[in-house]
Image (tube, rainbow, N blue to C red; front, side, top):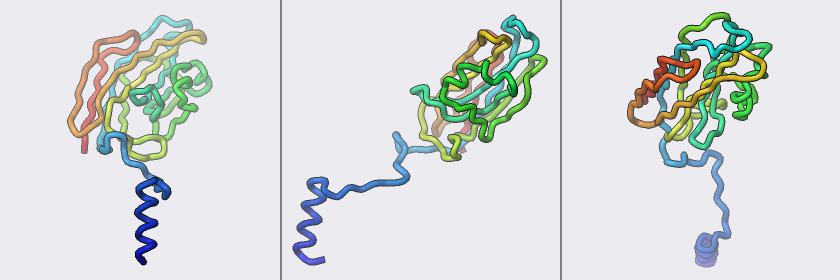
Length: 175
């Protein structure tokens, strides 16, 4: 490059005349730790009209409440009654999720999250929410949210029991 070219490049960089773009911007905090979140909960009745038949969804949201990924959904025809899951902008996405029909009895549900979004990309480390919703009626549902930290350290929790969700266990284990 000649002297004039170097001068123009220097001026362009100083004044932002050359734009740089990236198709893969860095994580907000610069770290995207791979790992696994294991989730377990014991479901119980909320005394809805259709009990013991019920539908349930478990999904991940970021700290701002933005949908990341569905982990489990048991609802086929009656999915539209999982209003919080649908309103999370999930678009009823079940990519990589455990899915099945309406449940006819309560019990332990387990699922896991590999730290990725619906596109399969590992998401940034930080605070995330495990969201759970259970419905036994056409008009209402019970839901709970549990916060955990995705990062380079293990985060193991047994939160307090909530309506319809007890014996909750969350364990993030980095790789």
